[in-house]
Length: 172
Image (cartoon, rainbow, N blue to C red; front, side):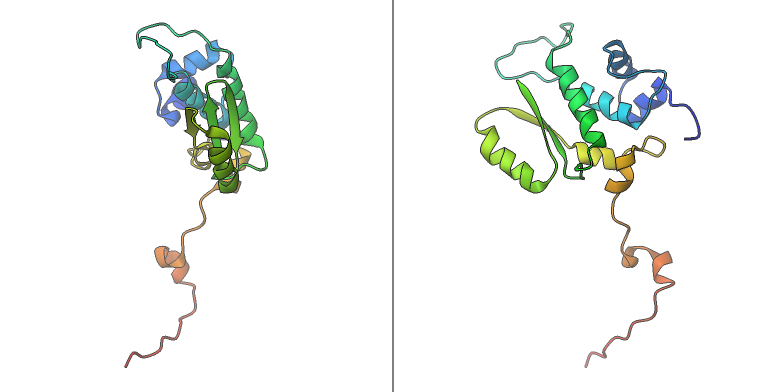
């Protein structure tokens, strides 16, 4: 990587206010001295999960939030999924009021939705997509594995310049 990632550049890349990076550092979820793409995902997950209000819970938006026991669990589960070889673009982080789960395939996701959710409230975070679309300079090892497929030759003029001509049947 060309340069050191700062808290400000991490916040910009995450499309979040710097307050989220500061809060993640204060909670010990990231180390400002050595920021990387994994930290970008951690801050994004923190920003989503910290704002969740579960059915039956009352909380004023102006009320100071304290660290909930599950918050580090959710962020650390996301971190583990980042380096998991099973992680795909279809990987989803499921946040339940009392648990957190990860599914890696559409089949696992369908099983989870049908057999586990029932009538429970759940929030899903498209972790695989977030990893696959990390900005330049923030990629993690899985980013290359999850990168979008190369554009088809039809959409890529450079690729068609080297393709041999095809014979087309005359339409009568």
